Length: 209
Image 1: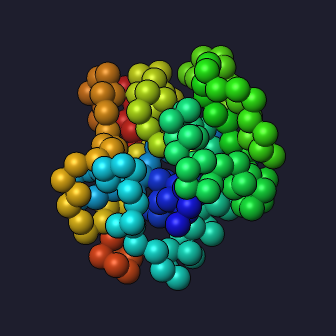
Image 2 (image 1 turned 45 degrees about the vertical axis):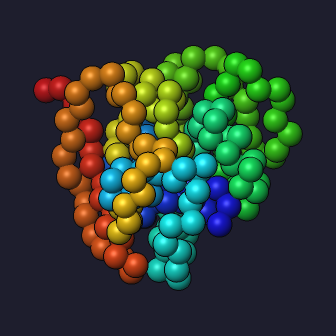
């Protein structure tokens, strides 16, 4: 499975049944930004060395993936995620294969990216994503994690957290949550199970009253 197969698990599953959720469509004032992952029960999105051979993939998953791609039109990621994509045979091909999804890679050190539909961004990620949220379009997927997700959490720009929990304990690897910088209250929006024993859960970020 290449990175974009993995990426679908980065935010897909539980979001798939929520494509019509407020904030996802062009008729709403703000687009929804979702940070998600396929993760092990102990909270890792990849094993040591970036291994993802533990991910469950089936026809059920394919249906979820299809619905998810129809609910978004933008992916944002950092340099490390992009470089991992290259090693997995993903890269910007998703922008073509999945119907014109625009991908924005945030980095001040990468050179030009020669991939259709992929754009290198060297400006502040928070300001850029805030601009995307106020524009027209479908949902926005935050792919990967690390510093990019932390900065977007700190700026209050992430609206939902989506987890596809797999029935496996990896013991070590790449953690889904790093330092978010502050306490973040969530409320459960959806929870369901699919084949393979995976549990798909979506939480909405609670905003201050």
